[in-house]
Length: 327
Image 1 (cartoon, one colour):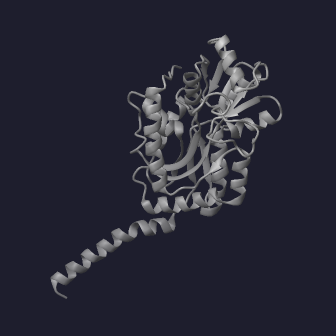
Image 2 (cartoon, helix red, strand yellow):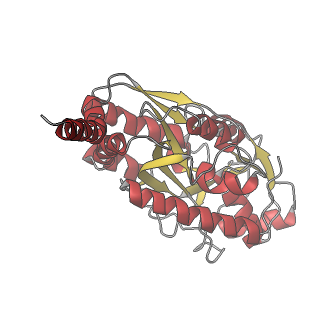
């Protein structure tokens, strides 16, 4: 064998090894439990969706998916932790509208880049918010709430999951469009906020339907509207905010799973297929629909496009709505 042919074989073998590396990695992946970082305490809408999907993904991948709840700062703490994690496919992040399209526009120097520090895997679902009041509030409709708020400016307190959260943005958008002055009371997550709402310490909340529907059904809270573009199938008689008195109003949340940037495309593909299969399983579709959540299950490219579009849309909304985000 000539030196030239020997060298050529070495080069070809090296190239084959490089090209086959991601394939071999994907074939062996995963070999240990995965961690899914959730930007909310247990019991909130994000947490409910995360557990719903992770249980099905765990079965598909034959590995446990451990939920790591990291509440605080509207999701910033969880997002930063996920962005700095090793891109090995074993740390995932449940991103949402707040962490990927709101917080980046509220922080002068955010500790992560929503468009560069993550590898989108799949957009799981979208969800309108439910406008709920404590029964002590003398209003049974959006118009009555607006009239009451205008008669008592600053006296009605609303809870949110935290400064910069989707629930915060949605209510401040309502303030801006309806001409009301509802006072913000931020909490570190939905569980704490709902506890005070149920106790009457705060009067209302634009919140996750997943978490609030049980309390509405038992009469502990009063639902007056949904924030989406159309009525929810599970509450067909409940109008949208736009129908009920604030034309063109629309707000809501969405959930998707991401990995740290530079995660192998082969691993992203394995995870994406497992997540989409989970999202499209009949039992998950039924559970989501029952809780006013719309299942999606997108490709990584579709999710990346969604994030870019929402990043721009929400950024423009924050700049032009007149909303204020003070703790």
